[in-house]
Structure formats: C-alpha cells, structure tokens
Length: 94
Image (tube, rainbow, N blue to C red; front, top):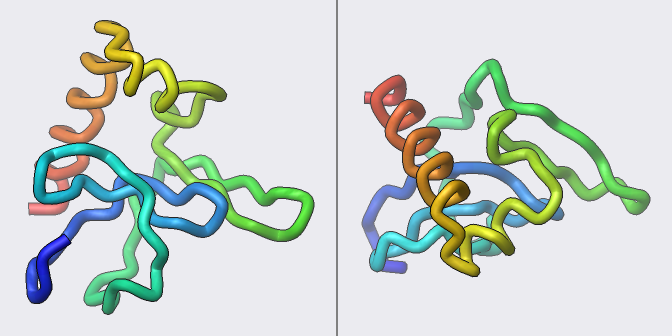
C-alpha cells in the first residue's frame, strides 16, 4: 500500500477491508491502516456477522463461501466474476 493513495474497499471480511493493492490483487488489510474519506457502501452488499460480532459484507456475487480461495487458485469463472463486479462498482463510484 502506498501512503497518500486512495483505495476502494471491495468488501469486508472479519472486519478487515478487501482492497485492490498496488499490484491489483484483492488482499485483506486492517482498517487501522486507512483514513476513511467516504464511508458509503453499495446498496447491494450482503452483510453478515460472525459468532464474535465480526462483520462480513460483500456484493452478492462475491459473497460466496470459498470465492476468494477459488479466485487465488486462478479459476477462470471466479476471476471473470470478480473483475466484472469490480468494474461495475468502480464505474458507479466515479
């Protein structure tokens, strides 16, 4: 992550932000590393809470158990879905 750069939160997993890093990979980062400048979330995010109150929130197509494991295993369907969702959300945010 680069200091002073703005990042777009793609989802929240166990309270961590899923963010496209400088290499274009969707990794998890602790929220304390960032200053939130716009806390609006897309209306279609599905939010759930874990047993200890931790928050999980993703767009519907990314809110599938094992989605990111499959993405990082380079499964073509998940890669295609991921970039389609990211492009849609970035277009709406612009």
